[in-house]
Figure (cartoon, rainbow, N blue to C red):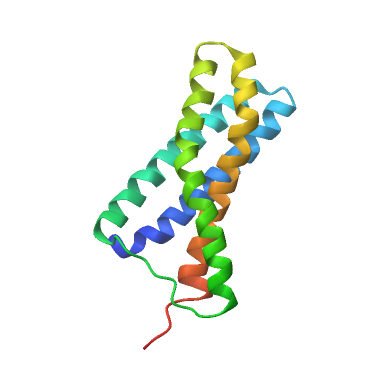
Length: 143
């Protein structure tokens, strides 16, 4: 594996995080607390590995351009410009959600989680969409 493989690895990690976030939500809604905790810890670990790989890749490749013209570029930029600030926001949100849970302050955990899970879910899904648009659906135009 080399650095050029990291965007695909990152998309895979984001997709996995999405699955664990959704499963964790389903488990807590069905009162399966142990499964919820397992899924959410796994989502955090997967997201931390993603963030590490993302930073390594973008340290070596600081600029990534979407070169496909027209409407795909407009859609890509809309997704990207919502994804980026929410991706920055999700890290403290996750911390503000997890810390009360570890302290057994479940009412606070639940209140903050209502904001955290849709943002985290959006960021993980749009991370996969950004990858698909950049590398699969609309790869760089030669020339």
